[in-house]
Length: 483
Image (cartoon, rainbow, N blue to C red; front, side, top):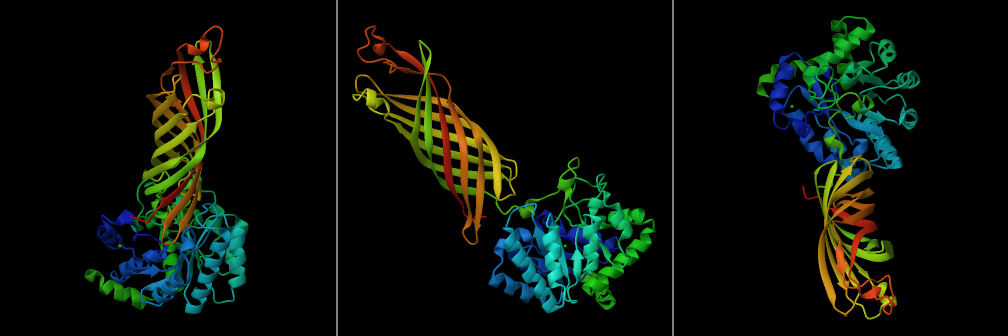
């Protein structure tokens, strides 16, 4: 058996890569192809192949990394693609499920790499997700009889499958075909015997019975077993067919493999588990290009202050106060961003009625946890909550000020618009609406609801006030490339 697609160069294998490789080949796997996904990893991916005779490399820019493509990265593709252990251009393609890069950018980078593959006479390893029409269109335009390759982790409609077959492409199947909800059985039954291959997409897409665990090349046999079941043939036939197909497509000649076997002792995603929600989801940490490890930002917004007075219950609202400050972010997990913010606002609206007062100053120190529902998308939506320290300075009737500090609770909703900039890190515009509720009440030595010359003397009576702040705001964030 040959595992034609395994990301064993990923960090998921850093602790035991050698052991994984040893047991893979000890159990009879003939070869493993490791496709690169971004230029920064070309060297390490190729080095892994160069130091293990039965491991081969693919070199390419994954659609999630399309924004990293430039003349320098294309030059690196040419460099590594012409080295001895490189057998394909990939993993390349289109991904419209996530929006790590604009579609036009993805299509341009995909087409460029198809052209490089044809120029260098190498097959392509193609990733597709929710982009069938554009992908088939580009392949049709670029197919001049020299383009060859494989659609990895294949699934889709019969019509899409037939178009891929008509273009002369191969398909490969991975652990998703063992899932309960996998419904493309007819495709596996119909695929020609000389046009399909096996893969694991390690560390993703673990087959049954290893769902929820890290995948590895050794588990490719479970994919072969399922294909044999669906095609109603023996597993030995599946192994023979797919091994021959892989050798032919990637030019893994018998001589190369025998040489690799002789030297063995001298020598380590596309994945659609999200389409099967009742199962444990796949690993995805390789593909979060919008990681917010540590960031700083400026805050600008408006602060509407609502005060509830007693006795004689009544609310007063002071709207549209300019609020500004700064914030620091840290993200221990992709789905969680922790922030500490400072916000300053001055309320001078009472001075119109009572010019002898000093303005009320409100300073808010907010500690907030933001829970992101889609951390790997270009736009991240979240809910948030946390404690606050509210530093209030109130102008008094006698012209002095009264400082009162209270605790509060903040909560709200918002979203990030992520803008990655090569070499600078991640910039983000954060729009949110936050409410800050003061715990307890403050005490004033006058009641601003009444005139100073109120005949009943209500202006001069002591009042208790509960307060909350409504703050729509923008944060302008920068997350530098520090790690």
